Length: 444
Image 1 (cartoon, one colour):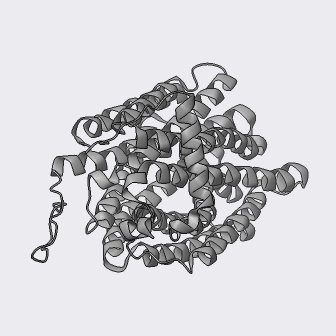
Image 2 (image 1 turned 120 degrees about the horizontal axis):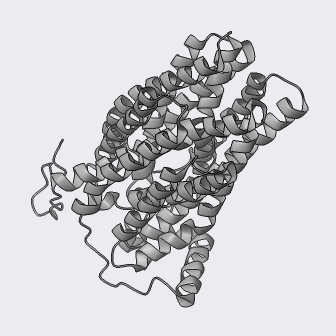
Image 3 (image 1 turned 60 degrees about the horizontal axis):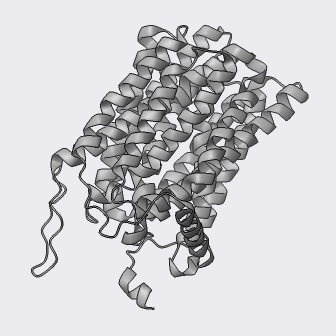
């Protein structure tokens, strides 16, 4: 791994911080850990558990509602959590507690009633999403401006190895014993998280303030509202957040429904439901393999051409990927095309997160990282509410009410996601990602 402190500097310039390799490696490893949960629970096995409980016809709409409730909770509290971490002496305790809560809820999935499991998923997924927000805001602690894209890309690439772990667990154990499956995923998530908890050292907040109490709630809420009202003081912030709503809407929804879509493609081609679940796992493996490669390449590209141009290329790739996925559903293309979609989606996923995090840091004052990543998380969660809800509404109207085949209804839902990516590209076009002089902007 390239040492984060590398690079020759002009004489007289301020030297970059020396960041231990162990800290970088530990931060990257947490990306692998949380991907075990997102792939194993959100993308693969919980949606299959819901299908087992409610049947194929209701699976899409039911899973969409459960996911939307979970993301709605984190959407509401994201800005508050971000403001709390800006006031706290350190961010790491927040990451530790949300990880532990997520792992505990995951280990208990499918052990009680269906309703109990749905509630556990809602809480566990909300905790995972909150932890992701805290984790992203630690990027400045393990990188410098000159290597931020590369470190972010390494995190994405190594992180997707966690998807291999999640899929591998399912291939070894099978998908029938869901309680054991979820417990193993929870244990793996926790074990791979521990190095980050121990070795990522924060510079700390020199001016900590109380993080609990009514006064904190009032001050944090007022500050967030003031930031949104005075968005012009932070060039590009509001436009970026608006564009991010649309492209993350499409991406989060594709990730959530890829398994159900793969099952229906297999069924349309004469396969069984069990064969469809196996196909979903293999398609995910293809996506993961290309996401790992993509993470390293996109991270390098971010440092070479900047996060904005990189993200533009990634969005065009998403447009092509969703168009092909849509065609599979409408024209009943063979399962082989689904593997191509998985490969393209994997490359594109690696690109989004490699460019996305450094792009946000370009728009963020150093003393407001927690708050701004709260807003960043909030729009991501908003899209994760609206995406599954929109998918559910479309599939409900076309399949449950319109009588169309499930695969056709899903193809219509994919069409809406394609339009969202196009809209996001149009919104982001006028933006610039040039570094901001925050001291000058404050004085101005």
